[in-house]
Length: 275
Image (cartoon, rainbow, N blue to C red):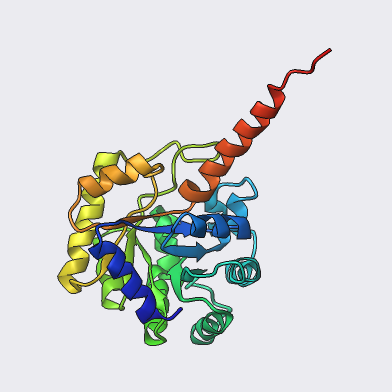
């Protein structure tokens, strides 16, 4: 699916008063089930591989594998099974071993409709983040990746973390912005430290307002932190203006999987054996 078609479908969803929902897919069955549920976007990124292996999503930021190659490998499982939904690739924009323009062309040739910036140094703070920026491995490379993707007419849906990153990504031509509230809470491997929903709503609103000041047509979703369940997303949408949906990764594939398998096994164990 090309960028124009994908955007037209997203805008039709918004105009109909329905939320735009994106879903991370770490496996083919996750993608298949998400599409059956009516998801609007599917995103493949390396943390999905780790998440569905029972590890925290932040594994995707650590040196456990080649993030960009993992996405290419995962595409062989997900792209053939998705029939109608645009699929985005999580791209490590700071990867020094990729000629980024050529890599984006490769992703388009594989069948990806667009990209998102993940792994992202936006989730890193403190002195380590400062050192990354100082040594040429900063967020500006992710902004440049989005700019290159936009030039190639790929759908772009980057994570943003504050007003500065929001403005930079919007100016780079982002179609969709996803204010990131941090590692998702809940479940067996979710975060314990997170913003409140009220704090998240205020931050998402601040970033949305900064984005539309640059481009009134940009689409803004929300993601992460305490926004873990449908009621949480509903709270954010009810307490913000101009935020039109939610992107979930752990929320869509990890949490439901944990609950469903646990309950199914418990139900089997509850069967009585007649003497």
